Length: 237
Image (cartoon, rainbow, N blue to C red; front, side, top):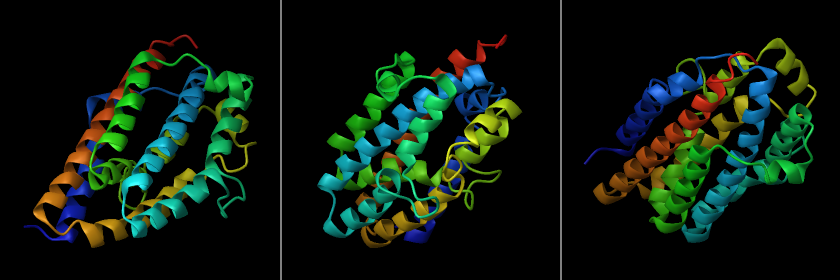
């Protein structure tokens, strides 16, 4: 059986290879104009809301010490991140409102790209109907995929920002905490390592960790791939 350190190295390779997947390459292949940014921002709100629901599902079934880890993570997301004083979910909502001119309730009721909607349901199913460790790994791998200390070339938040046009950068810069995920997920990802150190010490546990991570990254490919096809067609915008 491999060590926990070896398991983490496999996870690190997985998230780096994820950025070479065709759906992710396509998603990162075009500039994020304001018109594209409006669609992306709305889907980001729904994506982050889905993350909150998935982490809550994991928290309901995991051991008490892991519940504490998740709660510390979710305080940044839903109550207040000391890096900027607000919470991440509200920052995403404000960004979407700024770009689209929509009210919060309109953003939450917006029609989504069907493939994205399917990915959200798939993540929820994984979080609610898997073993707690598989479900935990499925959510934790997305934090790892945004960890700039692990991902060569930077995580998804950094890559997204690089693609923004000057116009969209100017608009989102007015939102407090708009760029916090560029660094926050390094801390979030590192904090989750404790759960693997404690609980991923058997062959079966490691199988669940890797299975959850692979499934979740597949769902991310589906999410970003479906959105990429929709956005890439907006060539004239």
